[in-house]
Length: 86
Image (cartoon, rainbow, N blue to C red; front, side, top):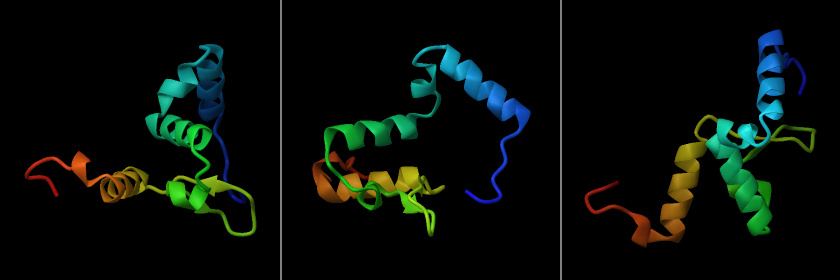
């Protein structure tokens, strides 16, 4: 991705997470959710609420990812909606 830079602290944090074995898995629950979905179901990235970086094969998680996933799950499985919820 053009213009994206990682600071030394970002790199050190990543190395520390990787050194913890599966610590990276727990570091970001939304990444873990997406990886689990993509391994279990053949759902294309755009259907998993990811956004393509134009001109690349890179997909990113938008800031609204948690809400997008919740909305899609509730649309597919309305029984998950809490009584009195949205």
